Amino acid sequence: MIWLFLLFIVAPLLELYVIIQVASVIGGWETIALLIVESALGAYLLKRQGYATLAKISQAVNEGRIPSNELIDGLLLLVAGALMLAPGFIGDVLGFLLIIPVTRLPFRAIVRKRFEAGKYSSFFAASSTGAGGTRFVGTFRAGSGGGFFDTTGSTKADPPSGELRP
Image 1 (cartoon, rainbow, N blue to C red):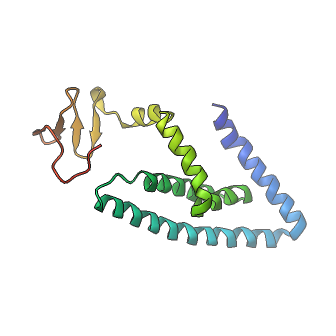
Image 2: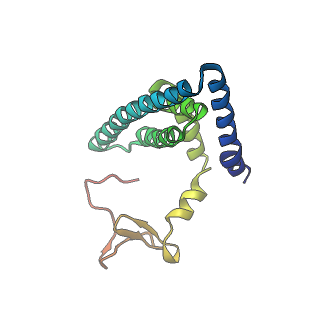
């Protein structure tokens, strides 16, 4: 609950304070121009890194392996885009740290450790359950007996061959 307070109250006030301080040093129009230029640069870099990450995900799937690092990179790029969406210098600096591959590595390690420790499992479990406690996976529903049930009514014991298995 405290993180919501920090996210929605403290962070915007801190961003506003930094913008006012920068504007008092370099001027108002220059501050606005700097915010626009860094947002455009961030959008360009985010687009390039996003395409590169999609290519790496596609390559991993074609090789028959689960793209774990690539998916974490995609999540971090999503967060970077959200940070760069709102005007402000602090969010943009954090966004740039998440966009640049070398500086993204420590964040990837943190997210991986949290996933491995099960810190996010309650969020994803709560958001992915359907009616009756079953999980939906594409057009399939995982039943309580461990089998997969197609939503059209046919029962599948295993996923089709050639697909990735967990």
